[in-house]
Length: 463
Image 1 (cartoon, one colour):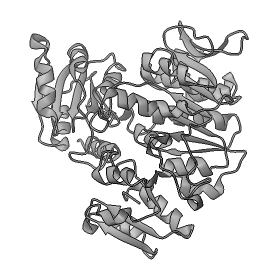
Image 2 (cartoon, rainbow, N blue to C red; image 1 turned 180 degrees about the vertical axis):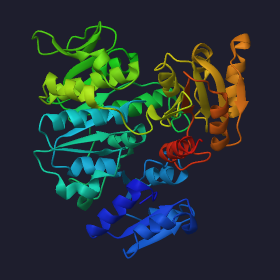
Image 3 (cartoon, one colour; image 1 turned 90 degrees about the vertical axis):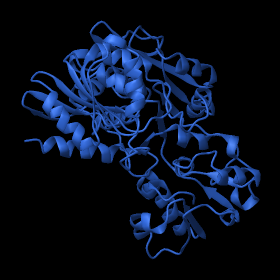
């Protein structure tokens, strides 16, 4: 097992339970893995920590955490040796007895997966939500029944293992369910959008888009896909879909799927009269990008037999997922929003577009080698004060300097705590203090969730 993060720990426990001889390897040293090692205490596991020596390739199979880049030297050598590679999400997909809904996209995955789950539950279906959200479902495999539905959020890193590109010929005894030949895609798959993201991991935008396409590329004729009509990349995926294709759109009526027309959300389905879902004003989630997420969830849910009434009830009641345009508090007439999930400029732009009020923006973190030009132009129109923090602060300021006279005032903070203090001093009643970093958290935090919790604690402590 390569990598001892969340999926790695689940796989080690699962494989030990299946009687396998397991070696767990991680780049981190034992002193940096105390929590993970404590979780595996008492299990018969061999460890190789502080690096990935060649000896770990003396194995029958190598399971890889999504945090390990495919161009890591150890994985390059593994492929050269013809070693069988897999991952937790691919193994779960092979073993899951229930139908699987897989959802991917550059943004909106967690919100849309949660919406789909709630719509299915409103339609009296038993749902298991997992993948890149929550805890890995492999550890709850025994609880899943054939009549249930599994909803998986899938990142591009996870989807890398859904294609045959990493497959070598397995020994006969390792074939079958564990390592079937060829690629695999969920029988019901959705792609929300494909915009520049993770170019610090993928060698090019084309490679990133190809990884996303694996969610539909290996479907069968009886399968179905839901694609974003407004996104040229995802719309083009329809040519790779062997089964039914449904769309969602904020701009126009789609041949079949869910769309926005005027002030209402609609379903266009199987040649019948279009069915209204609800008014835009009834959607509780804030922002036009979240209207798109609701439409995508409706198109997916309709394929599973959920009524427009159940869809509407969820759209009216769902307030959102933590760290996604989450209202933390209102203090001294300023509303503080946590959008720590905004780990790319494009995602931060969606947050900015969700407000008509003047914005004090907290931005920074670690850059993902993505363009900041469009973000800067939107900042010039929406933001009255920028507060920068983290590794990417200098790079972001250079993008803002390209605005010339339109550049808003910029303050540099030495930490997130100082950034919040600056925001509390500079924001005025009626304005919004928006934490939408645009970069990853890895310069100072374990992940965006830890960063978001830190922001919320700092804002809650203002007095």
